[in-house]
Image (cartoon, rainbow, N blue to C red; front, side, top):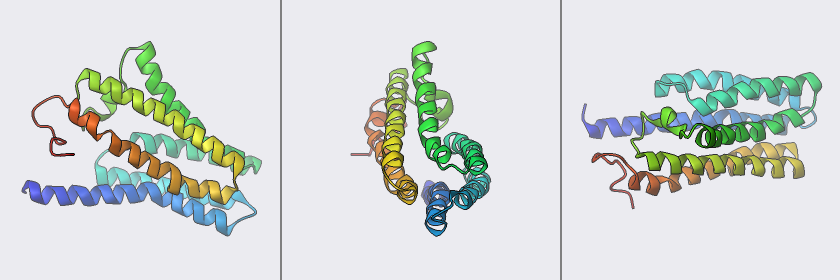
Length: 201
């Protein structure tokens, strides 16, 4: 199979994987609008969709996605608390806690262990110099804290359907834009001659 055949195939897999990440959020948003007076059915939909999406993601990408996997675990935990106490605060706090957790883990790895913890996670996909891994890790740690702050502002000041929609129209697009903006760093600190970003702007 030639590289020209492989690239479209990988592109389609990435498209499907992105759809699997957005799918549970879309269903959750639709459910919050359908059951306006009770968050619990929407949480059930969200949790069920996440449980289905993760194995499909594993099948498509041939690996378990670390961040969606952790996020799915917390959906079950905080979704369970939401249903048990009939209080939407728990599920609304989930993105704040998960993003802060990622930020603390990445930042703590640098401060306490002097290790960029993105390297063991994404080292198979990217070959960067040590300086590149450090800078990329710092950026993602700060970005996770930023996402946590965005979630806090939205859930405390807007309705539940608006907050649910923000996961698709605010947080997810911000993440895609931020990831795209890291291409220059990946290009600059790529370790080796086979730089896949060499042809980027």
